[in-house]
Amino acid sequence: DAMVIQNPRYQVTQFGKPVTLSCSQTLNHNVMYWYQQKSSQAPKLLFHYYDKDFNNEADTPDNFQSRRPNTSFCFLDIRSPGLGDAAMYLCATSRGDHIADTQYFGPGTRLTVL
Amino acid sequence: QQQVKQSPQSLIVQKGGISIINCAYENTAFDYFPWYQQFPGKGPALLIAIRPDVSEKKEGRFTISFNKSAKQFSLHIMDSQPGDSATYFCAASRADKIIFGKGTRLHILP
Image (tube, rainbow over all chains, first blue to last red; front, side):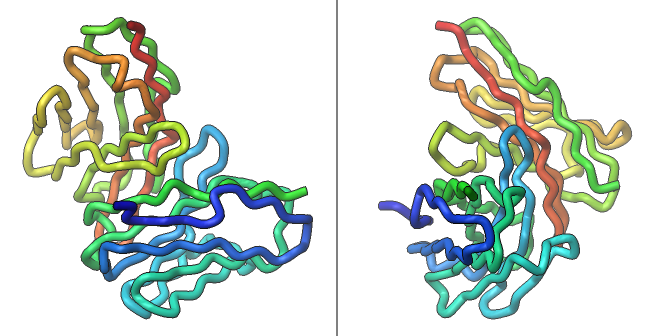
C-alpha cells in the first residue's frame, strides 16, 4: 500500500554526469514536491508542481530541473551533479494547492556524487 | 526572516518521561505549523499541526503549545516510549512557502 514511491533508493553518479530521480504516487494528489535534505539539515524545498504548473523556489540552482508527465509521476533531473549535490532527495505530495496542506513523503533517494 | 530555529539538536529521555522540543520562527506571515516525524530510512510523516488561532492542540500523547506573541511553538511528548525514537522536524508555512527546522534526534531509553 505504498503511497509515494521513489526510485532508486540509492543512486551513485559521477561528477558532471546527468542523473534522474523518479517519484510516483498512488494518492492522485494534485501537488508534487521535491526537497533536498543534506546530512543533519532541514529539508529544503526545490520546487513543486500544482497539476502541470511548475513553481520553482527562487534559490534553486538552474542545475536542477523537473518534469511531471502525468498526475502520478514526477522526475528530478540534475544536469551536471557537483559534489555539493550529494544529499537525500525527498518527494512529497499533497491534495490541495496550499503548501500547508498535509504532505505525504516518500522514503527518499540518497544521491552520492563521486 | 525565513528561518525556523529548532532546539535541541538531540535529546535523550527516559521511558515514561516528557520529551520537549522547541521551535521559533521570525516571519509573522506563517499561518500553519506542522511537526513531522522521521524514522531512519523513511520519509517524514505528519505528526500533528497547529494554526495560530489556538494556543494548544493535543492528540493522544502529543501536544503542541503555541505562543504567537513570542513566535515560538513546542512539541511535548508525554509518557515517551522507545517507539518514539526518531527525528522530529518542526515547520512553519503559509500558502506558498514552507520552512523546516533542522530537526531533533530523539532517543528514548528503555
